[in-house]
Image 1 (cartoon, rainbow over the protein chains, first blue to last red):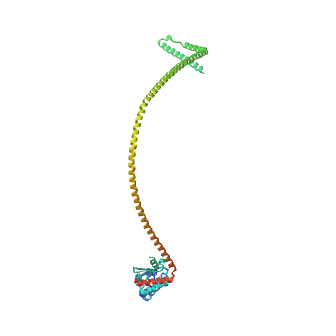
Image 2 (cartoon, rainbow over the protein chains, first blue to last red):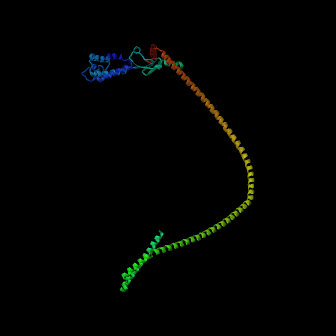
Image 3 (cartoon, rainbow over the protein chains, first blue to last red):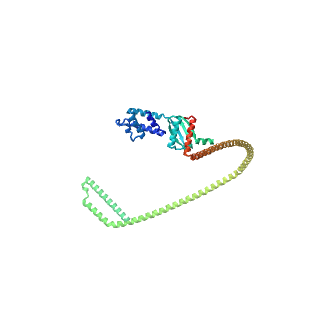
Length: 151
Length: 246
């Protein structure tokens, strides 16, 4: 199960990714008890992303998950995802996927734990970033530096 | 036409008369019959009378007619003359009466004129008599008024001078206080203007800085490339770590 978590969690970087995965879980939960004679991984074909479906298939084959175990698993997985801390980043440009991965890696390396990136683009801050984490907030933008010069 | 009418009228009278005679006769006959049968008039006699009357009537009819017309014309003429004469008399009487009336009227008019003239003369005379007295009275009143006028003018002058003096004093007082008030207001307004000026200048300065900042931000923002942006973000993360934000 933890392996499953790790496999999927690595792909969840931004808030948008998190929302998407939560939607996939809901779909799987809705289909779980429908036509019980058919495997869940079969029922999910074409309805969720393939990587998610493959993980379900693996659980069916390797872990022999029953329907009730799947139900419990989805609930726990959803709670786990919702407990991952979020870092809010306000930046002046539209970031590339590579740069987002770079930031994600930085957090892994420097914080030693998984975070969800909530990125908001605001060109008015000129450059740098405004960062919010667990209720604390700091402004490291160029806009603030420019304003300081004229104060 | 008129003559024919008269003739018909006379014939009708005659026939009426004859009918009355016949009725009287019949009545008498009945009476006699009742009293004595010896006094009866025979039917023969009766028809004889009738025949006689008819013949006489035929014989005398044109003559009667002529005579009646002549008599009537004569009578008419006489009547007309009489009426004319009477009219003349009446007219004469009326003329005399009117003449008398006019004469009396003339007399009355003369008498009235005389009376009016006399009354007018008397009135003018009395007026002339009064005139002197009135003139004297007017002179007296005029003198009194002249005297009072002088006194009044004197009083007015005295009073007026006092009032002008009082008025000038009050006006001067009001003007002084007004000038003081205006001075104060001007001073207040000058101070307000100065404050407003300072405030507006500060606002303008602030606005200028805001514009400069905005221009600087836009200029710098546009001049930064993606690599620099990414570098700045990474520096911000490092700084946040230093600041123990995580």
